[in-house]
Amino acid sequence: MHAMLGRLLLPVHCMLLLKLTLIPTLLYALSLVARYRGPALAGWLAGLPIVAGPILWLLAHEQGKAFAAVAAMQAIAAIAASEVFNLIYARTAARQHWPPALAAALCGWLLAALLLQQFRPSLTLALGVAALSVGGNYYCLPRPPRRQLDNASHDRLWLRMLAAAVLTLGVSTAAQQLGAGWSGVLAVFPLLGAVMAVSMQQAHGAAAVQTLLRGMLLGRFSFAAFCLTLVLLLPRLDSNIAFLLASVLAAALAPE
Image (cartoon, rainbow, N blue to C red; front, side, top):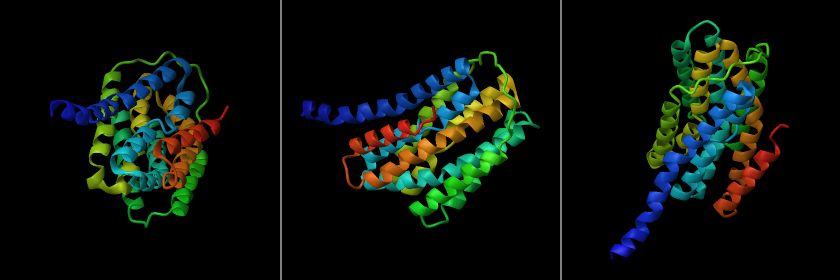
């Protein structure tokens, strides 16, 4: 009896460990990129499905492939909410310190996310609003001059990693109550953008933040391709194969 119970609990323990460690580890690696390679490259990497990918994978294994496919479609649309966050933060950071910039950007994200929930989900709508938001921010985000940055501080990095673990655990745990729509939107919550923008503004000022957030635009294409592949393949293939193919396509679309 005890041996059977142990075999049943092992997958649960492994999944919990994955939730608490995978995304914080990725965030740590991204912080190293920002420190040694600069905000533009870090922004591009932050635009990739570094956070949403693992969350959607967890949803597929815990809630089923159909649930994850709907969440992936909503994640495409939620690119628009993340771009609203980026635009507001980039513009506000030029005039304010990080607390009001972060508060204004989070309010903008929430309003955009609530608006997205009012529409009947469809793949055409999701792709349309995502393309419109990325295209709009290409012209609306500030274009700061390129300059060499000193190494960014790793102060409070453990707080960023803790926030990543809490978000992953919260979204995957509350998925049944939230539904696939909100689960997909929250999977694209601008966690990486928020924690990196705040630390970048504290260390280097508004121009570095704007470079970071503009760099995220390049990663959106790979992100959308990743989620679109999941929407199309999850109903037809094994979930692990679908995620593998989506990851390969996202990597193939990454800019040189």
